Length: 167
Image (cartoon, rainbow, N blue to C red; front, side, top):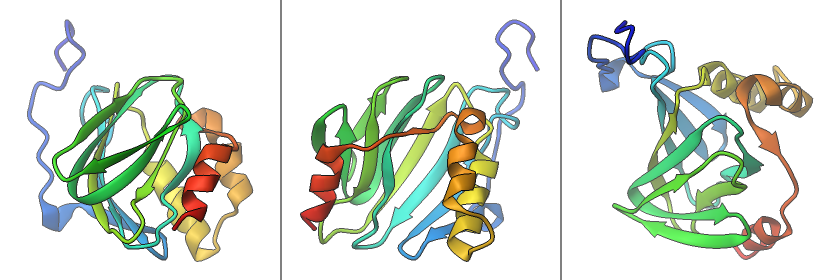
């Protein structure tokens, strides 16, 4: 580590064949790319793949990190505060700490999205928890109980609920 910048002193390379993929629901897949430990805390990155009809991520916010979305393919709907944005291939969005947000593929669309947090948070175990919930090995309560540890703070959003009902 470089003591001045607290950044890794060597590049982080993750080959596609070596990346861990997790099924966090019937219609979504998370591919783990780089966690905070590998990047000296600079960032955490994953690729989120959504099939048509995926509910995506519920309304939530983070207190410690900016979350960034880069749409690699397809179309995404993203709640930001109380507005619904539609992002297409090549679109990029940053969501600063404490800003409420949620995301899912647009109705009738699939989507591939690069998701990056900065500074990095140790989130890979959170994604593994999501997969355990999907498999019935953990509960939704376990997700809520981990909100402080993984900096995910969920809430009800009537705007997002209405958007999801419009599928």
